[in-house]
Amino acid sequence: MHLVKLRQKFDATELADPVAVLREQLDKLDSLIHPGTRVAIAVGSRGISNLAAIVKGVCEYVSRRGASPFIVPAMGSHGGATAEGQREILRLYGISEETIGAPVRASMEVVPLPQGALPHGIFMDRHAYESDAVILINRIKPHTDYHGKYESGVMKMALIGLGKLEGALAVHEFGVRGLRDMLGPGALQVLAAGKIVAGVGLVENALHHTMIVKVMTADQIPAEEPALLAAATAAMPSLPVDDIDVLIIDRMGKNISGVGIDTNIIGRIGVRGQTDPASPRIKAIMVSDLTDESHGNAVGVGLADVITQKLYDKIDRRETYRNTITSGFMGRGKIPVVAEHDRAAFEIALRSCGHLHNGQERIVRLLDTLSLQEMYVSKAIAAELKGSPRIEIGGQEISLFGEFGTLSTF
Image (cartoon, rainbow, N blue to C red):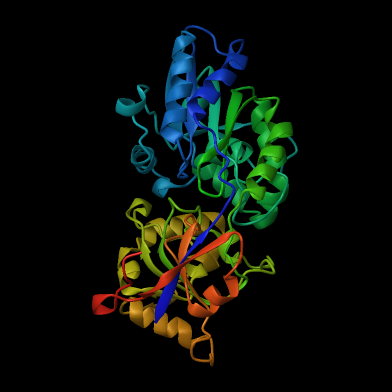
């Protein structure tokens, strides 16, 4: 099988200096950050462009105000639901006392907050609760489980990220409804506790470069986050065609998507009762590897149809099952067919598509679901896209496999 290299053209609008934009906006917090106070900077578990620089910029601002910043992981049950696991995730993102200049205080202890009329408990990380003020930092983007007024972002971090394992379990107990319908009211209840003073919302373009930095006071977050989500949704990349026989994904992982493989890209949600998007329509998905940054957490592996033995051997069931069970979306933790190597996995995936005319196979190969600017496609797809103003197609055909049945270098 030979494929052709393809390059998609996306809107590359981005900020030349995101930290400078951040600094210009932080002054609005002057009346909220007081000398001698302790300020918790909440940081999550998602790979975010310029995250370490943004976190450092916020910490430096807090220090200039005469206050003492410290960092708390705000990532729900991620990191194996352990303090050390969450500390390690932050370290891998370049966030530590040595790099940022502020201590990291990681704990899974939480403090219950008043839940009002809500049917579930509300919790906050103990270190954050015992601080004088909390500033949240998170990327705002479409969620992989549902779509609603609030998805992945600052509001979700307030309720689930800072709520640690207890907060995640409380909301996920209600399934998709808990996320779609209860996230907003729950986050408002957290904000009402008065500890959170501000949030920094980040939006990235299709190339994963920072295009928006928005500093919001706590009272602004509920009203302003939906507009940031709309901007993030409009900037989302997509596959170049809707109909695909086999989608080959070189790697999946927690640093790529919260569920390892971005459901918004592949058109598979993998949640019982949730209807998949009308497109793209993919007959079979093969995944070759799991990123080292995932530490064995292969949640989302159930979205694939075939995986390799290499990927299977990296799966830490404890990590994967903890994340899967917490979410309640059990299908995402199921193990697909396991093939000996890449070539065998591809052949199984292709066979599952039924009869395909020779030379008309519709194959797409991605590095991962974050990287959609460059990919490889079969000749049938390349011919279909020829002449498209947003597509560049290379002339040289490249073999799909190298030695020993492994995928060729991307």
